[in-house]
Image 1: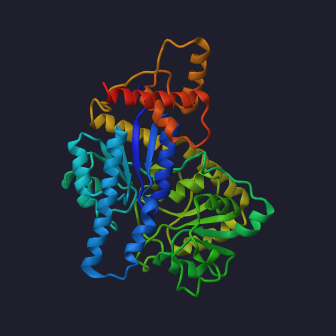
Image 2 (image 1 turned 60 degrees about the vertical axis):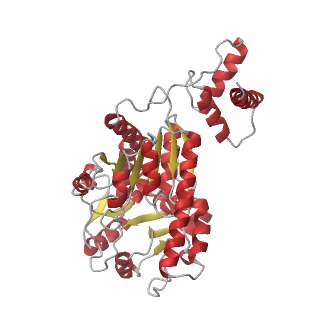
Image 3 (image 1 turned 180 degrees about the horizontal axis):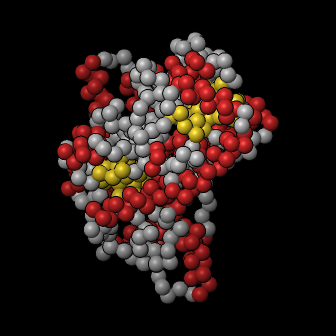
Length: 424
């Protein structure tokens, strides 16, 4: 960890698959001792949807949407000016405009994006990647070379991960098992290849969870909760209650039911961390992440059907696969490790970073009993004993639980200090 805990402004997207990834990154960074302020872009999603609901079409709607995104981007810049972060970390689809990113660059702010999407499907990276200091991706070649070609020399391959404290094995009581349990389950959106593939599984005890499955009468009997979105907490219950968790990567094409691909989706790591058994389609980058005996894989629809039949009658083998996969994730694939890798990469590419001065320290000439209480407070905040007063204040202001007398006094001292400085 850095001698100076980092201040990170983490910018979430308004919606989408990278939203939970961003929250897991924030938790991992906090666990590593850094101060994280989240720009909660999802809070603006309902207003953005309302703009689209005005029944205005064409160029005028596009102008309104762009103006709305400009406003959010300016709010992010204002937040940056207030926090003065060492790092602005944006997740894919974060509402940051190129103009704002260029202003942040002129101000000397270090920015990074973790682009946790398929670059072939979501091509906006070409315009935005050069605007970031660091651009982390979940794919390798030819993407890394293409990033260099568009002016982004600081590209980092950073595969997805799990958060072990959250993605942990769950115990299913009888009620949970009745609601979520199945011999075979799938959690995810109804992409065309999945719809076509799952029609061949209708004869099984098969539950489908997630959204975008409407207008498919052939699967309606298997879709749970009328296709409602599933929370990350509910997903854990589904994983643990299912005998086999089917993990089929998405494709907008329905011709190939099991699509070829390179990146490994977050569900692969999350299922493994939960100690849940999964059948996952083989991916190009999978062998360097998991060994053959850590994940049960398939490459064709026929192989999937055969393996479902095989593993449904072999619970001991399922448990052994699940345990080996869990050990591998805990060892190599946590969000803590990913954030450490990202921070290390920034330090490699940005010598002298972070450049922030340490700041004003807490008073050293305190009575012994107060020093003890202060040391306990710093430990509770996850800060070192030599933390600056500013970092302590940032952590205290992020807390929602009742303040102790010491915490109240420190906040009062900080406000008094600010007022004093304004008048001298």
